[in-house]
Length: 374
Image (cartoon, rainbow, N blue to C red; front, side, top):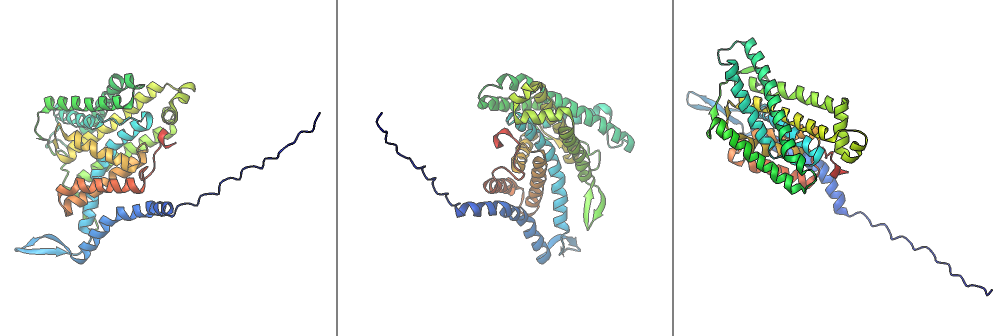
């Protein structure tokens, strides 16, 4: 045998590590602290303005009374947080459904509207009025809350069963268009139910009546109602998702539906449960809205749904805590803008903040807990 020549091939040197682009580091820094600065800019600016230039507090003997304190800013925060509590309840429904099946349920805002209509209809059935005693009023509203939540939760489950489940394997655009279609159907149900004009409802709780004052800021009954409904429901939902067997099934389905099915989880039942919980929270928000605003309208779900969806995206779609945080932030922004700039600028400012947050932190304030996020 003749000797065979061998050639040693030296390993190819790995390409040198590419240095991190300076702009990437700057963006990470700005995304962390610039976001805090952007959110704090509006209240800080108006707080300094109130202290230095003052604000009109009324008239005495024909003369303007100018105050130099933070009472007006505190009132804006109290009003905004109470409004934000309603948006948070609706936003949780969006974020729950998206976290499970990655669907934007555009009919959710109109489920909230049906909740308001159901609550107002039950008031008349139960005989609740301005002359009802305190004990009867509390008991009647509690019964109304439970029934409204059951109605809207069942309606949401029905929508999922009829419209979304048959399209689960179809392209996402089909489910999206179906959701828009159901939104129009529910709007027409509301139109036939209570007509096309906004209708006033009795101010059962006298929502504008102050209960106590903190640092010159009156805390109204409507504010207390919003938080008295929102806080227990959010804590109960958080406990349910984190501690119960059904909640663990929801989290497993959100992470990987196929793996959850292989582990014996009934994925269809879990998805229906998610729609049930989201619909029930929308019904609770509908009751609070009717008591808080003292009027209902068949088109109220469109604006409320748009604001709540914005809150869910701002907080991090798929994250319950993010939905609550986003709702509260949007409520405060709305209150400040309505009071200082005028209602005509409110939507522009809210969506301006949304764009800034998406640019600085694309996943939202608290990130997202969906399969797309990994």
